[in-house]
Image (cartoon, rainbow, N blue to C red; front, side, top):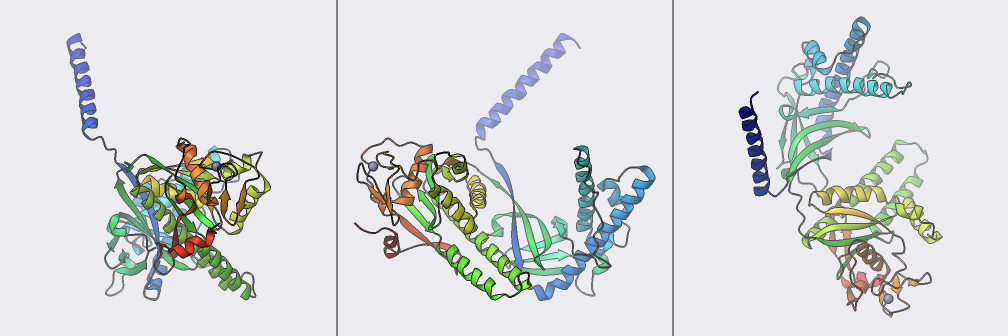
Length: 454
Ligand SMILES: [Zn+2]
């Protein structure tokens, strides 16, 4: 290549570089793609469970056909066919046409993935790993989960219905689809999302739907303020914005705990189906509570221009040599109430992420015994009936709000000054309204219950 030609190439490269800088300069906003799965219960199970059973059994049969074919190839050639080969070899098979082509392809892809997973484990020295097996229980076939991509389903967001296509062989005289009506958590609106995939999943002895959704979001936070969160039992979340505070009492969780353990006690057989359903219902209720709570918190933060949420990290307590038994007790109680700290942080993080807000875990060390107004820390600090009183500056605050504010200041230290402390003693309270499935502003009366006047 001569020098001229090289120069031209160099120039072109510079051109391209400039061009890309120019583009980046124009579109300063970075778009981010998020994928999320929402679970729905089926509202018309009696109409659709037979149809879904057929599809679920058919998926298991096709899996087994694929598994058998893979085994034969393996014996003959010493190699396992990949998903492309499985699909092209089996697409004429009767079991393949039991399902719509879309879910059939997916079943064979899953089988190929299962083989790959097994290879991976063997390669990493796991000798006990077994290749994927057959889906069979005696002579019966279990109900496999079935995935429908674009061509295999039709979603009607307005009426909360989805049509899942059947295969040629399973079509009955008129219908070539299963029409499922479904119910989602009240805080989920599928019309805000682009539904990529619908999965019929057999779980807890019933069919459910998983909606795999995608959205492009603009992760630009509305501001760069910091909020602080202290987690607890009485007040599940205490939120401080520095100048304003909100409490989220956990009374609903406690009521549930009481109710469900009483219901469980009524069951004679420890492993009965009824007991299982009670556990399942309790889990669902807790999950719903956490979803609504984290969504509400993110909305409140977004409204106030928060760019970072600092969360008191209970995990840190375990490494804290100076922690006293009270802290350990707090952690233990969280377990006892089934109040899943990790799950909360996880949900908060992905919901905040979608708004461009960072969630930062910070150590809880000293946050409960330090005065957020003057910074004075004292092991013998008086905390009575939820009230924190500073021995040095006499500030009186709601103890949980004081903790949340200290957590907030670990990320954004505020100069210690004569801060107006009314908001520290008078947090706003949001109560969970179970019927509506949301948090409501609560009247003064309830607020004052936690804060005795002096
Ligand atoms: Zn003080």
